[in-house]
Image (cartoon, rainbow, N blue to C red; front, side):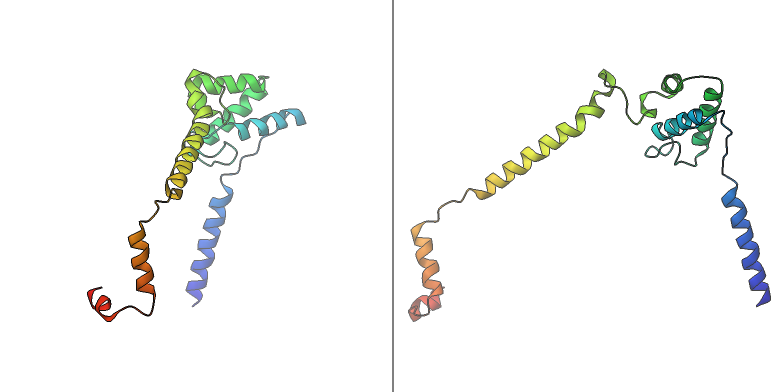
Length: 159
């Protein structure tokens, strides 16, 4: 039993060591530089994870891009210069809010066009279902006869 406790303790220590190994810490010149860094890593997309920003991703590429962002800010580059560097290197996909231009028009217009098409299909489907075809009188009479209790015995046998 003691061996089991020791193994659990060793396993816990190993896990705790790996959990703290990935924490990055940077020293900023001032609060403005730290705010710029935080804003950039929240606005730039991780190219590996594709649905996370650099701040929330633990991929190797995200760590490299965070370090690159920090170094560029230390060199005195502005947020726009850092963004432009990332776009030049990785394309508009690295931005969560890509600029409106010919190559990104589908990103901006696509969701609205898809929503309009789906709404049109739903409305068309609802209208098609709401059009009732008037039943013929013989069918109505037959249904009434089937529901009534006083049907003749010869009609019950034929039904």
